[in-house]
Image 1 (cartoon, helix red, strand yellow):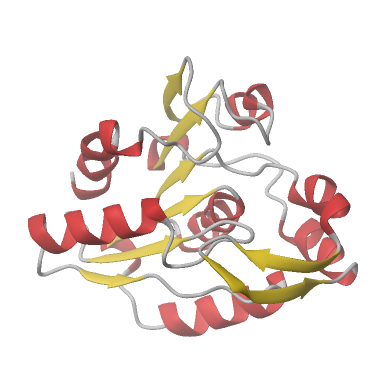
Image 2 (cartoon, rainbow, N blue to C red):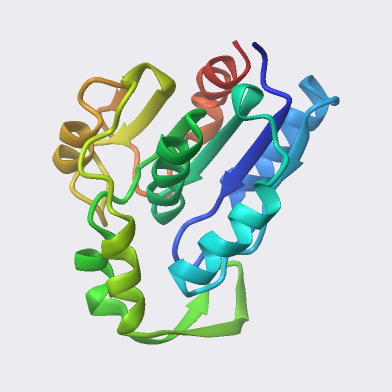
Amino acid sequence: MSCTHLLYLHGFRSSPQSTKAQITLKAVGQRYPATQVLCPALAPSPKRAMQALESALAGWPTKSMAIIGSSLGGFYATYLAERYGCKAVVLNPAVFPARDLSAHLGDQQVWQDPGSHFVFERRYLDELVQMEVKAITHAQRYLAVIAKGDELLDWREMAAHYALANTVLLDGSDHALSDYTDHLDTVLNFVFN
């Protein structure tokens, strides 16, 4: 069944204005105009972010919905895909964000809006631990796009966590996937076929 509803989840310190989000939304709007798309700003609290997402997804058809998530958004996408049984594309997904973000407590600036700040609190790390997916199920529902050149996350951890999934392993690139447009067709073909 083709995708009728698509959720895009941005990463830590990012926003719906991220380059990958905007490229994705524009392409989906042009190629699949009937698809309902949601790309919300995520609360700093993982628990609050998930509550808002679950409320927004209420009533979505799980068999024809898909999620694309980048970095921390990839972690959230995995959690939701396991819960709803839908397709997910994870772009340089965080696997152990509680560990990785423990060095980023306190005041944080949003990449796309330097005037926008939020506070990342210690209790959020526990919220992330509660959401960890120890092992994905139904690996065929996943597409992982992983850059060996990721300067923030260990590509080997990502590759191991999504070992049985459909995987695009990039020799270079970076955490932001600056070459995302080169992989957009692969992402959308997976989501919509």
